[in-house]
Every structure is written in structure tokens, then in C-alpha cells.
Image 1: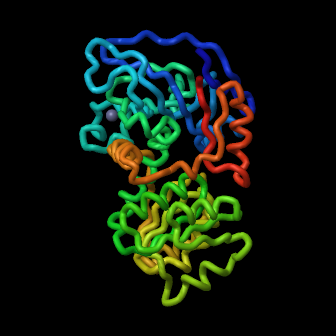
Image 2: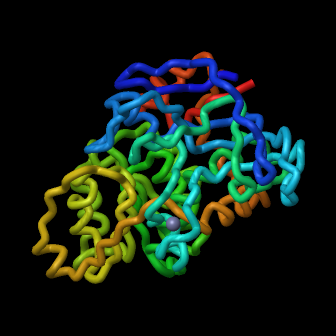
Image 3: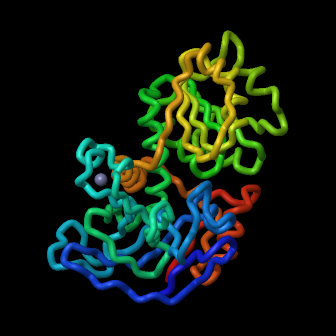
Length: 345
Ligand code: ZN
């Protein structure tokens, strides 16, 4: 079988690899769809992010779905032919965080396609993948693998919405309208937000955000004063902000539009920010991080699998595995691409 392997910055290869053996509790998946995520792009464009660097060849990919090809003797929940979204998060189940329902903080996490630990955890951009049964989440076959592969990024956004607390009737701001921003719009809408305003520094993604449930969209590069002018009266309008861009100017540029006591959920990974802490103090902002997910993966599969959300407008293009480099180059071009997926046939 073939796999998409990152060796170093701008050195992405499609390579032959052996198919692992199937244990009694394992499931072998014939991969059908794999979404290229911002972290995959960081490995490709920069060889990593922050202190996390690619130090050995690593198969990329963690937004993955496929068809079950074979199951071990003790597997009971899925069968050959089933469409499954693959949960790339393998928490240990034993540590104090796993035991208290905070698996995203597992002290022994094995997350696909991540160079956070060494040896790196190999990812899912490959034609065949052997997973543990607990990682396989079944969806109706009619939904298709392309939609199923959105379970992972959608789970990230559902977790962020959970971190924010109740959204029913709330006025929400989402900064950064890439796939995570737009999926956060979908999640906030499902959670009952009354108003969802999105921003970006380009026009490209704004129509998709509006089509997926945003009530207004602002290009803050073209109209830098508009957010404050329209939402800054009486100390600000928004109850909740989701910062999805990882850019400190998106965060601080929204402070005038946030009402006192607003909850800010930071999802975007942005390295070091300089922020006016006096404003955070005086307006009593509640700044919260949000990282990965746990139970939300099953929620995402349920929302997608039942047809209650349709994420297909987010898919810009699909490339065969042999054209992985072209796919990554397109995914890196934010003016042209929302989500780009690989196919593995
Ligand atoms: Zn653990």
C-alpha cells in the first residue's frame, strides 16, 4: 500500500509501506477520504510548529474515513463493508485525566500524524489502516466517506462550543473563516446561537461562512473599522467569541466589540500573543483555551450521519493520493481552498 509521508519541510513523498497485521481487537480500514488539516500543512510548509518538529519520516493525516475491510475475531461493533470515521485520538484510558473524562489531556496520548512525541505517531493518509475497534465510529454508508472525514475537525469545533457554555440566544463572533471557523459556525448554530458574525482577512471564505449559517461576514482587512462601528456600542455586543485564526490581531481587534464578561474561546494555535491585559481585566473577559475533543467525536458522527448538518459545501477539491503535493499546495492557498481531501483508491 501507499502512504503520504513527510520527511522535512517541503519534502512530502508518496511511499510504499507494509500493511500491519490484524489483531483480535483490531479493524482494518480501506481508506477512502482524508482531509488536509492546518497541522498537516504546518508540517509540510514549515517542518512543524513552535518547538514541535518533524524528526523522522511520519505519515500525515488524522481527518480520515473509510470502509471496513476486515475485523479481528473479537470485534463486534463493526463489520466488513461498514463506513467508519476513524477517531485519531488514542488516549490511554488509565491516567488521571482519562479517568476523569478529560481524555484530550491524556498523559500518554497517541494522536495520529503528530510529532509531539518521539517516536512520532504515524498518521492515516494511507491506503490501509489497522485501528482499534474503539476508534471506529460507524456512519450510514449513504453519507459517504468525504462527509465522514469531517467528523474530526467538526469534533474540535463542538468541543470549543462546549467550552463556551450555553449559546442559546447568544450573540457570537467567530474570527477566522477557514474550515475550523466555518465548522464552529455550524456548531454554534446547532447550539442555538441567535447571531453569528464571522470575520476574515480575505473575501474568499466569507460566502461559505454565510451559506453555512453565519448571519453576517466582515472582511476586517478591507473594513478595519466596521466591527467596532457596528458592534462596539455600549461597551460591546458579543457574548461569546471563538478565535479560530491563531492571529493575535484577530483576538485583540475584537475586544471593543465584546461586551463585559464575554467568554473568549481560543481554538487557533498562534504561538505567542501580545494582548492588552488591562482590557481583559477591566472588561472581565473570560479567556479559555480549547484543545482537540473526546466525546464530541461521536456527537459529530451523529450530526453528520443523521443528515442534521451537511458539510459538503466545505469541500473544495479531492485529489488522488499520487497528487498529494498538489493537494497540499492547494490547501495552503487560503484564497482558493476551504477543505481539500485526498482519496486513496
Ligand atoms: Zn490517559
